[in-house]
Image (tube, rainbow, N blue to C red):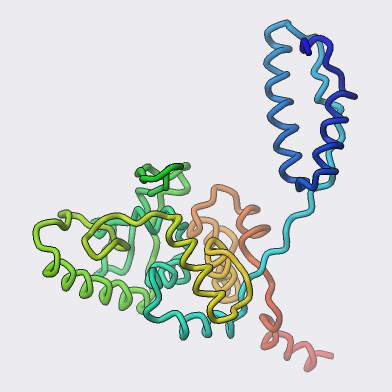
Length: 268
């Protein structure tokens, strides 16, 4: 159909068909946004006088319910996960709130165990069809320094000791500046593998279904409960928007404020 003949009704019919087919409101919203941007270009190029996608009514987008583990579930996960593939990576996410790509792109040169900090400066991503590539954080906020707890420092020291043993098993193949999370021969990890093995682990032990990325939510929620302010949380999570951090990455868990609420009884 020539785009000059395209009407809002045509596009609305497509949206209705997508909705009947069971696509989520978010997916349909993305579809309309792509069409809208394309037709805006047609308006700028004088092929159209108005954009027919402007008046298209989209289904309501209901954000999916996020399952954020409570403290007991996290403790259970830390108990049963010992020895599982990539378990050190999962623990590091809980300790630092790093994204999967940031964990896979973290090299030892960016870690200072003496001062207790690390720098998020590189990320690693999986390519479709196989292989990986390295990149820099998508935003200035993404490039950031992370302060480490004593427990996290101990975990990183243990990872270092294990890697020293692997170096002796695979002499001459380890890079000079290896990744913190890598294969026994020093090769980089694929982000996909971390996701897949995480799901295998939680299914094996019957833990509440969630995703690896949600461990990042757990980290933010725990810090929020410990009294971290919105700006502090946003900086640690690598967000340029405080609202994003508070709306999406922090959650109120059952019992989180039980100690604080005890004082309310005294006042009343």
